[in-house]
Amino acid sequence: MYTEIKRTVLVSGLLVALAASATACGGHAGGGGADKKPDGTATWRLSSSHGLGNIIVGGEPVTGSKPSGIDKVPYQRTYTDGALYAPVTGYRSMAFYRSGLEAIYDDVLTAGVKSGGASGDVLTTIQPGAQKAAFDALGGRPGAAVALDARTGRLLALVSTPSYDPGSFSGNTLGDETAWKALIRHKPDPMLNRALRLAPAPGATFHVVVAAAALERGLYASVDDTTKTPLSYALPGTADTVAGDSPRCANASIRTALRYSCANVFAKMAVDVGQSALRSTAEELGFNDEKVLTPVRAYESAYPTQTLPAEQLARTGNGGGDVVATPLEMARIMASMADGGRLVAPRLVDQVVKADGSTERPTVPVGRTGQAVSRHTAEQLRSALTTAVVRGEDSHGSWFITCTPQADGRTVSVVVYVARQASDGDSAQAAEQVAGRITAALS
Image 1 (cartoon, rainbow, N blue to C red):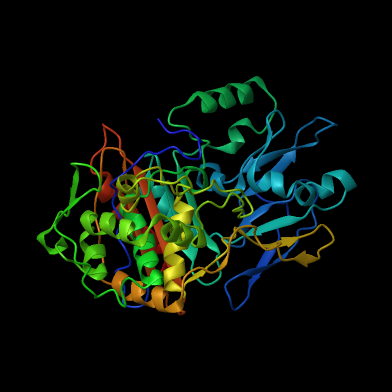
Image 2: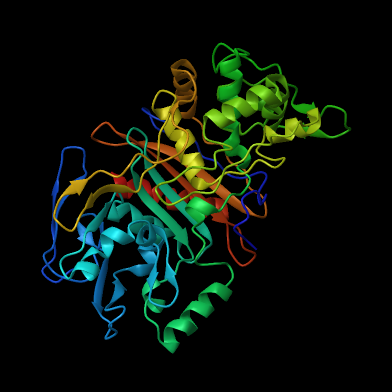
């Protein structure tokens, strides 16, 4: 059962497929319109109609409004493909308040209701094809998918399943109340935004952070240096061992260890790096940051801050030991390796069009950004991740992470997390298939 507890540890050994590419790891009546700029963003022409303003995806409104017949709240929100875009829009209800972009940009979206004129609109970064591909591929399985432009931080897909239709409770009738109660009682929780607010253990995906810390500290000059790690590594102070799944994991280089998900290598590497240096690199890459806004708030991805015994430190090397991460965080890490070590600010909104027709760029999202690791470290790992396909799973779920080059020279990091259910088949295969669908839609 998944909950919205920030530091819940759900997974230890999961699937991660790391960059296998050669270059990188019902709207207003009358409507509005969008002109594409060279960077792919849109300039929106505001509708002249009354009612609630709209949230725009790919130049088309995915929200609308209709008269409610109630003087105090004259308009009721409607949604197009509500379940598909719920992680993007949030909800607006006459009885149950609002969330997400509906809440953050309430003043813009309700300006016409208050003034009797037109309302403003919010233009998102989401690419409809990628969003739908991820949503359809995930189906009803509990999971999440994120596609993030490595250079700009634009979120091209933000998917969470199972989802919900915000239009089912946007009014204030008995039917709306029934729909709301059914949703909040449903397990697994369809109103949990798993892309931003589910933080399982990152498992093998955390190997990238450990490798970055080792390179930053100078333990290895390149990803091709041998790590001098026995195939079966004894955890310090215990009788326990961590073994690599492949004979190639004995004395493997970072490049080989990433490719074969060598648990022995990264357990030893975490101890060799030391907790202070590993934590520092993790934090530079976005862990332990409570202020990540897209502008919708994302939960904190955490690396332990209390002093750990060597045995526990070793376990963090494989993404265990109280290490947790959101799908958004892992997308940022892969984007950083693809873009010279720079940690990008993720953003869900391209532009806000106010009621008077004036436009403004959204404020810079809050959260840690900037040069996270050196360009040398990023380039080394980027070269290693072009050939790495590291797999691993347990009874809880699977990750799939990759970077995909675009025809226009951009790189997009794609992250999929799929929770494992007893009635399901292979969650690892499902995660890989979802990522493949997203990559194809982005091309």
